[in-house]
Image 1 (cartoon, rainbow, N blue to C red):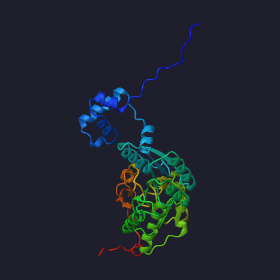
Image 2: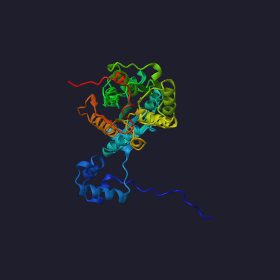
Image 3: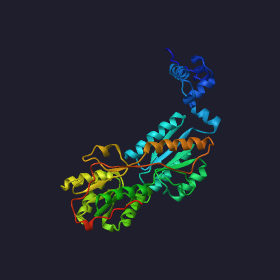
Image 4: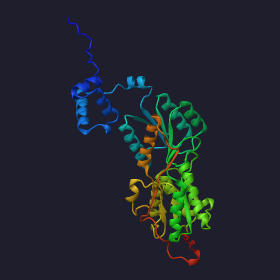
Length: 359
């Protein structure tokens, strides 16, 4: 009876020195191509890249981690990847980290503080080198966990550092003040707001504050029934608009704290046979890709999600390297005026909001 050997020949692992010999360069050059390709001449970079492909070389991450004491991994926790604004930011974050040889682990919290804490615990147990969060309304236990982990952390989509956690993002309150003032200048005085404001979403709370402050400056106060609280879904945008127009049928302008809510509200307005923008102006926030494609295109605030993602990556890379880093970075937003807003139908001059003149 013929015996079959169960011993398999194991090919020796390709080392960085093997790649160097194949490409006829030094091992240091191969290392620079792997870790800092931007500083290597294109012709050398191409030779090394070809040698890596020919030899099927892969880096021994475990060995590098033991040697350096770092895993070269970053953890990011976002509320959801179901919103384009976060998906765009994560993509930019991952691309920038990859350029410097870092791997990104992604988790989502679904706007749940307890889940955010659990996901962070899991990431820290993996030995990550840095943490990206969203917003500044984390639970106290999470901030304690971050301090105990002793790794760099940055929060995104807000512009002011809080409780020792640096931030990169926009001024959400100022942005909605501007879009509300734009509607006031068009002549609107009958407003409604649709806002997703769970305890974990300080960005939307700031946006709602901005709406109310701008209206208060114009002598207009939103009643509680004129502010419809919702989650971040299209369906919630629809039901919120239906409720608002049932309670306040004379509303001429609806300000939403996300594009998703605004697009849902627009769909419901069509079902109610309301002409946008002649009878009802609607605005969003984020400027997701579909915002320019709906009919009519949505007036909104454009958030620089990709720039936020790249900035967060640069911050952590520099922090890990021990370089000077800012505590707060405020990026510019843009008011994008499209077809979903227009002056309200003719109304008595006395009912129009007073326009503000700049001195």
